[in-house]
Image (cartoon, rainbow, N blue to C red; front, side, top):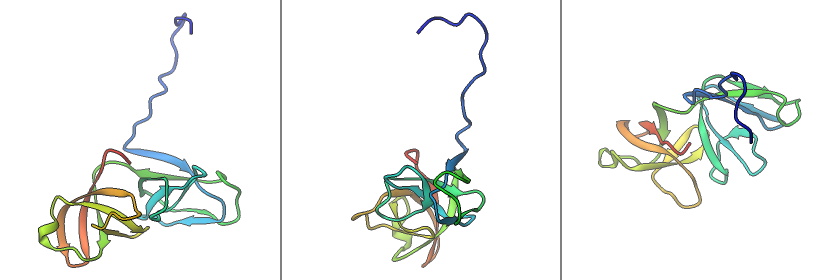
Length: 134
């Protein structure tokens, strides 16, 4: 690569809120945990996904479009309130893993990490700090 000979536009993205192309025949609701599968397109999160990319900042309806026909913006940093199963106050600081696009669990088997429990709000609701790897 040659040195710059003129100014260029910075290609940096603010990674707090970033857009991903949505998988064909897919609806992602605002507030959903969003994952990408082996195809690389965003979809409602599931344990078998390649990785979690964040929480849907807005919804996206790609039910009649091809792969990538719509985008979904996701929140990648901060903490969010999510539904949980089998959580107690003793789980503060524990890692949580995706069960579906609305639920997390402390059971890691066959799933991927969403974040760490910051606060237990009830037996079925937790505040989760999103992890840096999403």
